[in-house]
Length: 300
Image 1 (cartoon, one colour):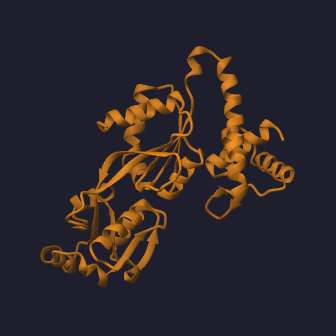
Image 2: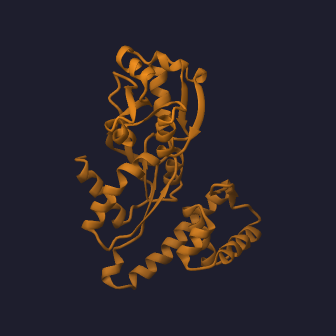
Image 3: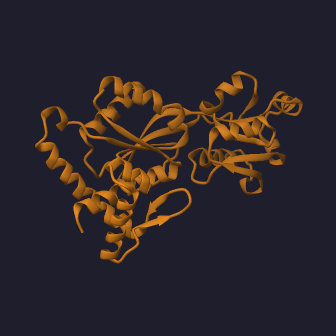
């Protein structure tokens, strides 16, 4: 076992991809695969679980990651100590984010952060809220943005934006009548529903608000589960079904009249979008600056 193998392992764990790790380390993908295979043979364990979408840590891999990251960080710290003063305080910030913050809030945050600290670097990975929290809890990333709160040890949540979920539906005669006449959401029990994927913070919040309104979520006619917000919007416009979604994601098509909106809950004042980090680990100066920028932008 050597540091090169551990560094390759850490990069694959953080990026969820052998090809991304290879690009980051300026190595070939076969070299990365060879490093991981050597580690697995030497430790006699399987470090990653591979599927068609991503590469994720096995349970044994999670254990190794805790130690491997510390070793790689120690190596980087040694390098920093003997590097120039201007480089010593800059570290690449790793960020995991769920879809809504990634598409509609994070670009402005990154732009503001870069304008204040032009030498800072960051790496962003988009996934669902549940995986964001897992990556933060496992210290695979420095900072996460999520639309749901999961009870994970050492995770510190900072609510920074109040999001509003709405029902959107095709702009046709049927739904125009519903929008004008209905005062509750009982009518959706008879509709075709498009939902976000399992693990999505938007889906968890939508189901929570539906239950609060007395809707039996298990009996809904869910015709599709879709990860991408833009694909959901297009599916609603084409008449496949209706959906519950963040107003941030659909304000443009509501204002243009392409879809109609209906309040999901007249009583709920929205859900919190959260910045989350692992308080059990010391944040880098760069990560601390990033959090400070978010707090200042949203007056926290």
